[in-house]
Amino acid sequence: MTSSFDFAPLFPAGLPAPSARWTGLAKYSFVGGNNDSEQLPLEGLIEATNLALRREGRSLATYGLAHGPQGYLPLREFLVTKLKRDAGITCTVDDLMIVSGSLQALDLVNATLLTRGDTVIFEQDSYQGSLTRLARLGVNVVGVPLDEDGMRMDVLAATLADLKSRGIRPKYIYTIPTVQNPTGSIMPESRRAELVRLATEYGVPIFEDDCYADLVWSGQRPRAIHAMSPNGGVIHIGSFSKSIAPALRVGFIVAPWEVMSRMLALKTDAGSGALEQMVLAAYCKPHFASHVPALTKALRTKLDTLMEALNEQFGTAAEFEEPKGGIFLWVKLPDQVDTLKLYQAALAAGVSINPGPEWSTDKSHSSSRLRLCFASPSHQQIREGVAVLAEVCRKEFGVPARSANVEKRA
Image 1 (tube, helix red, strand yellow):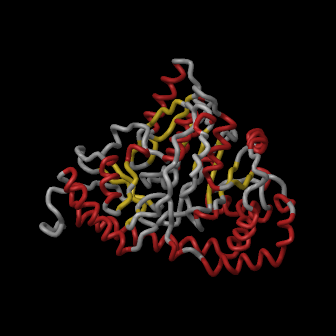
Image 2 (spheres, rainbow, N blue to C red):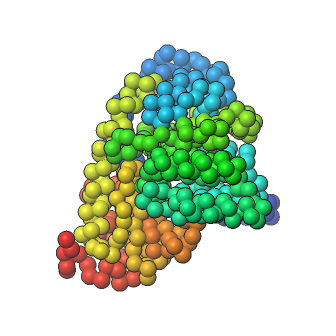
């Protein structure tokens, strides 16, 4: 047997730690942004695929379908209409760029605005994918705590004033104002106006991540922050991952040309997947407005099942605010529970969870918190998985003090 070539000496300094091999989803998977497979509009997507390919499939022979680097024009036209109707955003197709999911949007915005040593302002509990990217970039993240209405403006004002007094101008304020990840809160319009006012006063742009904004239980959302900005100081990103399907990897950016032109120069992938864009355009124009309410209705019932299961299995040991939409529940367990350790023990028992410290700028604040995705598992899997999680937690940390099959809790 010949020895394998040793690549290790050739790796440059600063590479991320190596990934583990994929071993499949856990039996009870409450992680990631996966959605409800039963609500995926499969037949509609099949019809849209046939329609798109028969109508203009031969354009796949040309990079970008000859629609330019900002993406497939009919999909951008759909977004112009949708964003105006749903979020109050007035934009043109030239203000939009289609990207490979919101993760590429994050990378393009960061590559355009950030360098090592820069400072950005974040919600204290926030999207893990955003936080890990900034850690790799060597960017200083200043967290602002949240309440039931999202980022607290009093603390943001104090933070901006403190940074200014030290000669620091943040490169952006990152917020997920509509169905915040992981807390599920929705920032009211009055607070959005205050955020715009503070950002304008201090000359700091707002980076608005609206990836979950379609999944609001009430069907009504406040205007996007982008729609409220008087000076164009907001970069807005969104995605079809939560409304249609995450594996399609289609997102979008709305930004002023001054920034868009710089991001286009950095988007060197020869264009995001064209077939996905064609299919989405063909499907969304006639069906999007009726599909989303059906999806949110199904997700809401799964949330109810999850909250009932937590109340039954954990009782008062599990604290949570009911989210106003989305696919996640942010849960607080007693302080003695270390969710990073709970994650390992639960995974060995077939339950995967997202431990809180990975979703926060303050690891101690979130050490006993966890994020549960309720969209992907079935109702039965939710109930069974929470029961297994409670048993593991009781063995590891004595929480809950007694198992549900011994003492039922109201």
